[in-house]
Amino acid sequence: MQIHIIQTRSELNTLEPEWQQLLAESTVNSLFMTWEWVSAWLDSATPMTVNELFVITIRDGQGKLRAIAPFYKTRFRLLKLIPLTVLRILGDEGTGGEYPAMIIDREHQSTVLACLIETLRTNQKHWHLIWLARMSGWDGFSDALAAQLAQSGLACRQRPRSFSYFPLPSDFTDFEQNLSSNRRQQFRRQAKKIHASGDIEITACRSESELPADLQILFDLHGARRELLGDAGTFKRKPQQVDFYRLFTRLALTNNWLWLYALRQNGQVRAIQLGYVRNGVFYQIQEGFDPDFLPGAGNVLRMEVIKQCIKNGVTEFDFLGEHTEHKRRWSAVERTGRDMLIGNSSVWAKIVLHKPLWPTGRFLQPVLRTSK
Image (cartoon, rainbow, N blue to C red; front, side, top):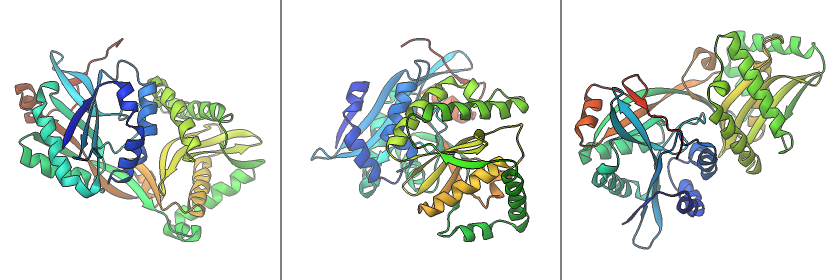
């Protein structure tokens, strides 16, 4: 096996064609591991986010790419004093994405994964912890990784994460029948009131010229609703995410992945929903509603999006993280993923894993930089 570590963006860019092919041949072929997602994130990420690339590639004896571990380095402090280097997956922060993973040829996954873990073990001086948050638990990769780690001597701690989705039938009537009778009646009452309120139209963003205005409406309506709940909202708290959305939605539009739908009353947007469709999966990303409009506009819009999904042969509606009562009412079911924290042999990594501490609390916090 040929092992190489990429640490510059220019060298990473040369991987694009092989990245796309390897992703298609892996078990982790989600939207969030595409080259488009990662490159848009790198273009929008601030120096506070990315300290250094640490992308590991593995090729076989003939030079064919078999694995990409798309890591980047970040700095954390333990107890606000001890500096630690933490490896994370490109595109995992400030995007709303889920399911970070290492991209490995499925036919050689066991052998290549063992080689990858050995590479991490022999390069321990470059990192203390590896933080894999919100991993999928149903594609088999995280199970394979956990099994290989158990044999490697690298310490690993895990905790479950909840996700929510529902399979889509081939007929919209079948979907409606999966809802409770109370839910169906509620939707019909809401739709009747909304359609009686004026000229109602549901539109989809189809051109790049429409995109900036539609995105700004999404940011504004999402923020207006969150403010009523006493929260500034994602887009005000995370300006990097706004930059990422603006970059990635253009790429998604070019690839026919973008599903940005709006419900308009007399031309005014009252509800808006952003999602992406790729490989038969609809990913529900973000939404916004006019708090001054009739209740249920978001429900009416989502029902239309589901109808369009079924019409276009989409087979899965992915609500992403957390399985809530709201999602359950849409006939969603829970599935379980995991967070994984891997440590090297240093005393500080052992302390973090023994306590246990996670990179989401006050004892282990990121160090923010202001320049590269």
